[in-house]
Image (cartoon, rainbow over the protein chains, first blue to last red):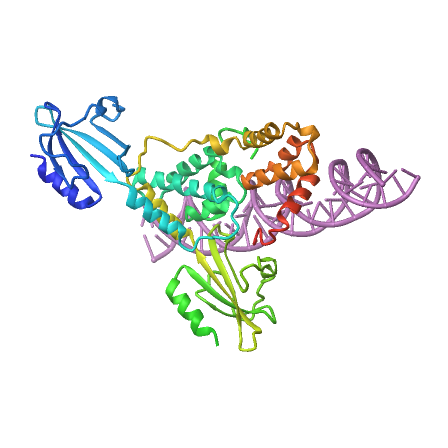
Length: 204
Length: 204
DNA sequence: GTCTGATCTGGACGTATAGTCCATACATGA
DNA sequence: TCATGTATGGACTATACGTCCAGATCAGAC
């Protein structure tokens, strides 16, 4: 019944994603597409982990991180699939191998990167990287790229960046402005609006 | 004479790289391909920085990092071009905008990433704590309290703090000065001494 | 289409902080 | 005692921060 969905997802994300369909009754694998581990239908599911997961988002778990024996890092999401009687008829797991993505990211950041005289190449890079990370996270949550953000989006992002004390770092403001595709003035304007209700509590 | 090379490089790396050809005699721009800043032939080069650069790799400098006013981060390489008489006839600069690469890298590492865990905001938040930590570590290693530190000790501590990019945070210098029980002037003096040998430190 | 109101923008501007410089003061040892 | 090296306060310049505002831009109302 669910097989076409699984096959479709496996095709879409392949070859770096494995799709597994479990039977919660017997705790065994119903089917597996694009397998990364030598499992097959009928093998035990080892699905006990689902119990430990946060049940706040009912029936959908993750993405959470898994570590394979060979060191590959996976992002996993699981979903409980229910039939017309609302009974759990299957559990769908999608395991995405993040290794190639991370390797590609490393290649990109290394491209033309300064090689000389960088005593600790981590810090200056660190906060600008953090900016990108915060913004990227928001984009993923809302599905709205930077170019199509509304004023509210920008306020939210700036709020997070401010909480992360990003603006305590010198030269951070222009970097944020550039990352948000907005002028420096706008950044300060939105920031002022953001901190206005909380009065003068923040010295900067 | 060098124009075809410049055009070729600009075409290869465009639109994210700017190629500038300078005349070291007059210190002016000879030509510019794919300009990112409103400069043109005849404008002053502002090339004094080259003198400060590390001469270990003769005639080729970088890549080092530049920061544009709008926040874009560039990787820059420079090369001194010489004629048959070995006289410097031109200086070639290639400035690569790293922003799109870094954004792409952020997108890649964010793809399907676990959302459950956020990077701890504690690290940067308490940079004054980090200062105390570095100093405390040094005191413990040498068994010498801050009051009894020699000039060499202070140099060593400031070196560590500088490597930890502590001075990229606003208002860090006075805090460090207070922690080391010295004046602000002394901190800047020692810092200058510390970064003097490496000359090309900050290509601002 | 025109007219709004809201928002963004680039530049100008004043202020705060980052760094530099220097005359003086204070050590330490010959 | 002097000489040498270092630290200091304060004055000074250079940058970066943050504010402000007139004009540009855009979306929606009419």
